[in-house]
Amino acid sequence: MFDMKRLAALNRELTRDDLGDEQRSTLEAQRDDQMRERLLTLDDDRHIDRAPGAPRDVNPTRDTALRTIERFGGVLTPAAGDRLVRFVRNDDPTGVGARYLTAVGSDPYESAWVKLLKDPTLGYARFNSAERDAMEVAAKVQSERALSEGTSGSGGFAVPFQLDATVILASDGVTNPLRSLATVSTVATSVWKGVSSTGIVASYRPEGAPATDNAPALLQPVVYVEMAHAFIPFSIEVGQDWAGLTAELARLFADAKESLEAEQFLSGAGHASSEPEGLLVGATETLDTATASTFAIADAYSLVQAVAPRYQANSTVLGAPAVFDEAYRWVGGASEEPAVLPTREGAFIGRRKAEMSSMSALTTTDGESILVAGDFRAGLRIIERIGMTVELIPHLMGATFTPTGQRGLYAYWRNGCGVVVPEALRVLVVKSA
Image 1 (spheres, rainbow, N blue to C red):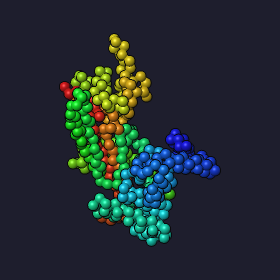
Image 2 (cartoon, helix red, strand yellow):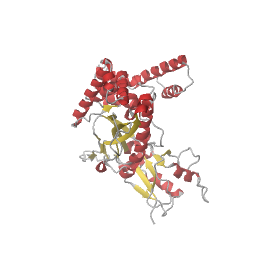
Image 3 (cartoon, rainbow, N blue to C red):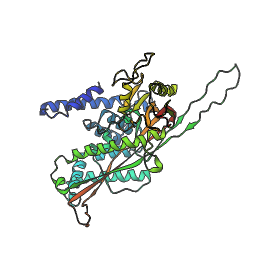
Image 4 (cartoon, rainbow, N blue to C red):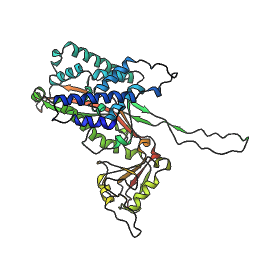
């Protein structure tokens, strides 16, 4: 039986450096068993319209992609693995995403990619037949993805599965809980469109009276997928001698991606500026503190009480660690109020709390947004377009336009963020004098 905690514990154990070969093999076998059980628990029977007892549809493209995801169970976090499985089974009708995962997840593709990374000019000459075939398959899938979006290909190389930060989605460089709070969707296209509604109004009526028209107003929130990029220069000597190059690149990709998202998912200006729409930009329901340039106990209560009733049960309070530090030091007045934050790790006025290092900690500065409360899963949507691409620059030139003995790695990926239900979130702003 699949156990999420057991899988996480096995992954932690496998990172230890003191494991013997036999012990590591045993742990890897146990982890693989857990991954197989997880794939079974994520079965898509609920999402397919067929008669009870009918055999499951056989989809070789999808099944091959699922086996690829299973093979990388030790690299993926459980949440990332589950998201990819749901994407392949439910959100990839053309199968392009599944073919992409299979192509970049093969061992020959990774070894070919590393050869090109070390020698962008002649690396292809050292490909064996399996590596050459793997690169051709990946290039074909890249072309299919471009055609399905109506855009031309860029000529870049897809990043191998285990280096791809858009697949692995894990980094500890900053404190950014938005992915765990929001609804995260994986797509293979350039835009996500949803449907939302404020609901309908019901009423009682006399016997025989005609029904009233209660048709809801349907809205279509849109989240655009924007392009982000990073440039990594490295010397020719490093490329030739660095045995752990790919592992270090994976760490660098993930760290750069997470750091950028911590800023942009919070305060990005939106599609018009080629940025994601940040939480503080899209969450338009705001509440000022009671007193100018002041953050007090009453403001904390006012914020959580301002969240609409339908979103109270799943509400979370988000803020910078320093803001919660200040709240933890508050003491009750003559009425002996209970502590807003009974323990530093505890809930905030009985609501779940989450700390985000990139949020403002300036609780006495006018106009600063210091806390956000509400149902983030209902209100905030993060869209991840699967796949990171790199382009290799064989030689970097100096000021005199002569080679510097360095190569360049230009990486780019696409994702987006947007507040799709503004009513689900409330922002506390320090009142201006």
